[in-house]
Image 1 (cartoon, rainbow, N blue to C red):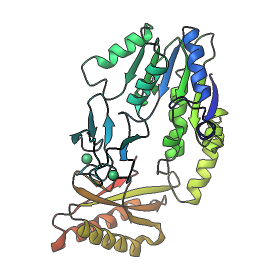
Image 2 (cartoon, rainbow, N blue to C red; image 1 turned 180 degrees about the vertical axis):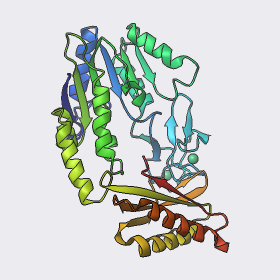
Image 3 (tube, rainbow, N blue to C red; image 1 turned 90 degrees about the horizontal axis):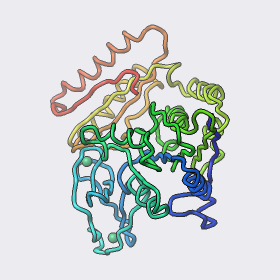
Length: 348
Ligand SMILES: [Zn+2]
Ligand SMILES: [Zn+2]
């Protein structure tokens, strides 16, 4: 199994040791791998060049006009793209709020890593594997083939590079930003972070050689990263189970997510709080919300979520019937003809 280490990005930024988005540890690892004619995989869970751009003067961020998300900057296409609805606009050079032309990119995606690595290692053959580079027929197979046959030295990619690929000459795997994974607001995010880092780590080192995995993070002492480094799934499992029991999450409780949508925000707010009140009279403290999810509006539809946690005591059918009854009653009210409500049992 490969050796795992963390590299502290916060420390490296403070001491001005970062080379672009690379810590000295990762930069050194890549340098060594290339010198030894070995391959490198760089993993970043975001495609595009930058997750958002921002006015350096007033802080304005271009957002999708149909969804409540910032638009991702795709440098190759010179466009801003909404990753939720696909709406694209041309790149902005002037702030729409204050007119300043100090437009800055923020954060980084696979495109930027590809660009930067090519600048830092001009001799290396670099390729990128993400949704954007694999749309064409056979593009994915071609990338795999080229990497397998060592026509690519450094492969930059999203989750696509984590799954089931066995390469014989990869000595270094870099996780560019583990914070992205750990900070995602979902009760499963720690479990998923562990799995994803383990999966991508598995690409390093084959046969007689031990690979190296360098995980860049601003939280090197994060318990999940400590579990990752120790290959200690049991410790992660035990801690997660204790937490889920305490906060009544699966597998101890069943989770029902009620999604409420409306194109009018006020109508949505009213209907959602009405629903939540009805659920609360029936399920008491096992109801959470209503709250806006990470993205509160997608393709013009505002949405809110209500979570209901049900004990695993066999009365699930009764609960489902009650939930449907409440939903149908709410939907049938005259003001709610445009309301969409659905229940997602044990949502993933
Ligand atoms: Zn501005
Ligand atoms: Zn959108």
